[in-house]
Image 1 (spheres, helix red, strand yellow):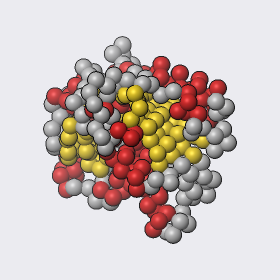
Image 2 (cartoon, helix red, strand yellow; image 1 turned 120 degrees about the vertical axis):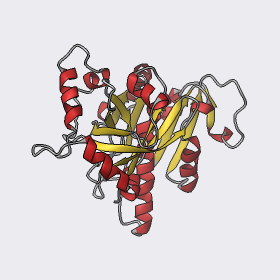
Image 3 (tube, helix red, strand yellow; image 1 turned 135 degrees about the horizontal axis):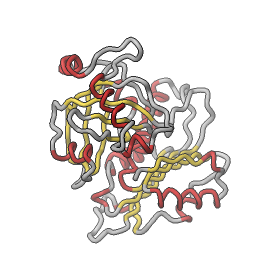
Image 4 (tube, helix red, strand yellow; image 1 turned 135 degrees about the vertical axis):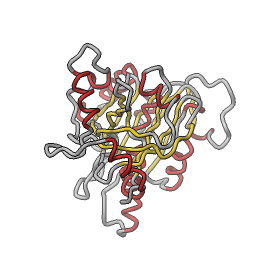
Length: 307
């Protein structure tokens, strides 16, 4: 995996090596420790204090920015060669000069990291300082630092039995689920290269709810994956406040209204289904309750709540 040469120059000014934990960013680490012990502790660090985190904090540099929607910017970020993550995990996002620490799920696959040395984040506009910085001050070339964390991930091994994935997303909760979807597609491509002697992949169905089709992030890529692997992937888009006509090409995938019990039931097999949920807490609680009523055991329902 190669990393653009500009990253090494940025890294030299951004971190100091530490014998105890490689690539710890000294100045940011000091700031974080001060914040963690003060009354100004960041919301993200508080909420995820009991979650798994890697020890290393890695320097990184923004190498691309696009408008994913009217309210969401997508960052492409070049990272250090030692940076690794599992599909579905998030990063602590440190910005020089910004006291608050952001928390953003990666929306790219580990395969993209291996191929190109980059990750991607899709961040919705809010007044929370890290998100506000991304939307108003971040530019190509901006230096940041990131630390991987999270217990919400999909990382199957070749020896694992096949299982069917049910991915349920609300709003920007699509980010980690899109990462999981892309990772599953990468594994299918790997299987093709190995003559179907690699991973045991079952089906994967995505239920994705947003206010309107403009707020359905990655919709074109999602439908392309479903069309490339129609025997494996399928999706339902749900829009709750659509006021305009739906694009004819998207129409077959779109349902008006919230995700219903009937929609979920069609994709639940208590013996094979593993469900990943990400979205607002009320949605997570409602969907989890419905899934358990449909016979899915609690240990087969994994969720990530974002406030």
